[in-house]
Image (cartoon, rainbow, N blue to C red; front, side, top):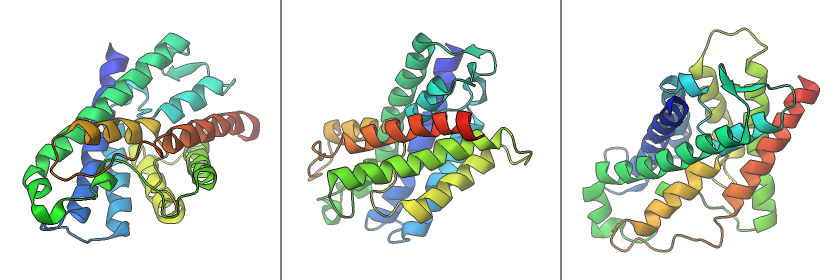
Length: 240
């Protein structure tokens, strides 16, 4: 249960603040409206930093791709200090991540409820909750997600062997870098829970004129990050 609540609260904070910065930038009439891609990239990076900071007992995965990367890495014997590597434990991680991400998206909606209700913001608000491609090409969109998630998991794997003293800030800065460098093609989900659970929240929340939840694309930010996480975990074992 300690692992569950640690992953739950960390992913909740991650998505609350990440969806929050997207709402602040995307919705008309907010004080941060139209702040741009750099603000979103730094906002998500600091959201990761904050989520990692409050979820130390579970190792702060906050992402099924990270959990999968550890599961497939033969050199990793634990999912976190004192947490044995086992399929049942991994499923606890993933369940907590999805529940935390869903509720984080709901609370982000509550924070901007009056702006979501404004007629000027009715239409396509899905990007506040979930990702979508700049150019729709399912195969290449999946490749983009694989690359971004590979970088995430591989570099995180390198943190353990490199003394830096940055703690969660290192992960946050990595996510900023991925967003600024690799995020423009698909919106860099790089995390199945961060995309699928908020997409479900978008589907069920009573948002006026919210538009489609784009379920035809929803598999890309799940399959791509899982593949990238697995490749990253294996690369850590082989190369690091």
